[in-house]
Every structure is written in C-alpha cells, then in structure tokens.
Image (cartoon, rainbow, N blue to C red; front, top):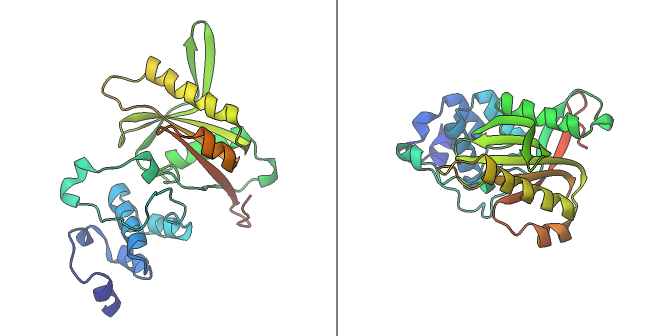
Length: 236
C-alpha cells in the first residue's frame, strides 16, 4: 500500500478505470512515462489483466515508435472523443508474431495470416482501432489488377491503412510500391471524410540508407517483424 501511495500520490481520474489487478501489474514500473503508456493502453483498449501482463512482458513500450518517449501524459478520460492519436503512436518495432509452427519455414503468406490473427484476436501489435478490410485486396485500374497484401481501416484514425509484408530486407522498390498503393486507395476507395491513407511496410530487416532516403513522406512507415515460436520462445 505504501508503494501504491508513492506511485499514485493523487487519486487521478484514470485510476478508477483500473482494477486492483491492473495496478499490481503497474506498480513495479518505475519509469513514469512507461507506466503512463500502459495505463493509457488499458483505457484505450479495455485490456484485461492478462492482456496488460502480455503487453508489459513483450516490452510494448520499448518497441514503440514514439518520437518522444519522455513526455507521455495520461489520457483525459473526460475527453475521450478528441484523443490526438497518430499512426506513429501505435506502430511497434519490431512487431512480435507468435506461432507454434516451424519458424524456419515461415513465408510471406504465413506472416500475412499471423498479422490477420493479431487483429482478429484484438492483440495490439498493429495498434488501436484496426479492422481488416481485405487480404490480397484487389483493385482494378485501367484494365490492370493490383493486389494489396493487407488492407485495414482504422476507425480511431479514420483512414485506410495499406500493409505490405516483405520476408526480406527492404528495397527502394518496396517504398515506391506502397506509395503507389496508398495513392490508389486515396483515388479509388477513400471518401472525402476519410483522412489520407497510411502505408506500412513490414520487413524482416531494415536498411538505414533506404530508410533515410526513401521514407520522407509523412504517411509511409517502415517497421520490422520478429517471430516467436511459442514452444521454445525463439526469436527469428
């Protein structure tokens, strides 16, 4: 109880949103910004004790692509409809994927399925508010058919999110491909009241030169994935 008082000296408005089992998971976290991040995740996503424990165990905060991790404020629960969320507040690097299959035979199609399972099971590796719009989503333009690996709609951000998966190191042509797809979605599907389409490339390995030169647009993001074998907890 002393530790609880020191961690939460003022009974903030967010604390009643947490159960005692949530608080027990949060008490050992000394970094206030890290603790605020996990409290916000509980509020945003209605996390159970088990889900919160998993987020902490998988070091969700450490893998977050925040530009500034030193100024994370608690959510104002009285103003939940006007949260300043962005895609950069959500994307983890790396994204952790779990499977009980042989990790040496994982191809891009298998990674697609693991990402879909994450969203369908409401795990937060891709962030908050994602719904699947289509797998290998087809768009026909000028008699040509284009297939997008994964197309999501994010109802928190009010925008479509194009996800391309590459089971290799990123190449410059991958950046050009996803820029083309995001523009295609903007032209063919996006409504006037939707925000600009976001593109995410999920690769096995980054290339710093390509990242520095090719990802200057504010709606294109690059991250990596790691696969955990749930039988032996090996990362690949």
